Image 1 (cartoon, one colour):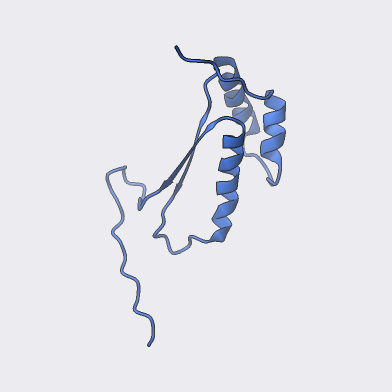
Image 2 (cartoon, rainbow, N blue to C red; image 1 turned 30 degrees about the vertical axis):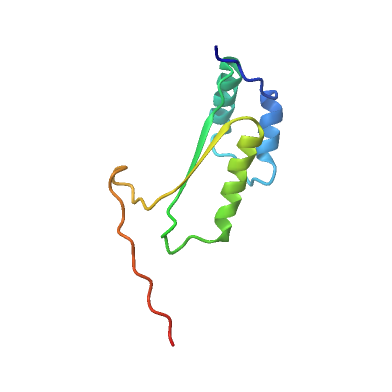
Length: 104
């Protein structure tokens, strides 16, 4: 038997997710998904994919990781994936680059 999950009211969830955010792109879509989640009792699955070999990966990416944690705090399922991926299908990975040798 599956149990329905109880969530905070949608307005409270939106307010919490809005904290420290400059804007929510398509807030009406997020609201609709949160309302459907509350009605069904099924948590949202929120995903963040990061390429750990990307040359532009930096500490600024922790902002998005923290927002993922906010969804988790609200009872939703947070999924973090750190894989080498370049967008041409899930089986197609970018090859590992060899790091340049440090100057001795």
